[in-house]
Length: 115
Image 1: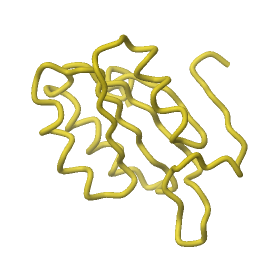
Image 2: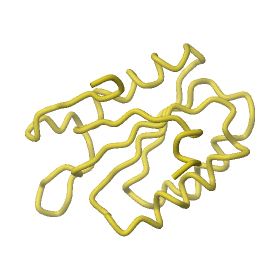
Image 3: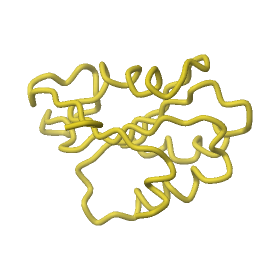
Image 4: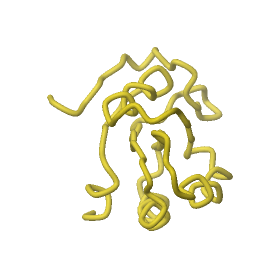
């Protein structure tokens, strides 16, 4: 399926795991680029979900605004992870997260705003 990358359940690749040693069931990868205006609302809606077995890997693709400041308050929750890299395009942003997530759904901030 386009937009999905599947890994085996035993392939944790450094992702957070529960106290039972099990990685999250769902990993959401969100490439960011100058997303300060919207990312706080997106992350609030994710955090408010009743399903809790997930992680969000935020890949900042060289934002030139204060995206990092808007993401920072969410990082106290271990389900949110933030990776920063030089601007290399959306594909490079999504690919940067692959080694650190187990089951990945790639999305954009725009898609999350619709949910």
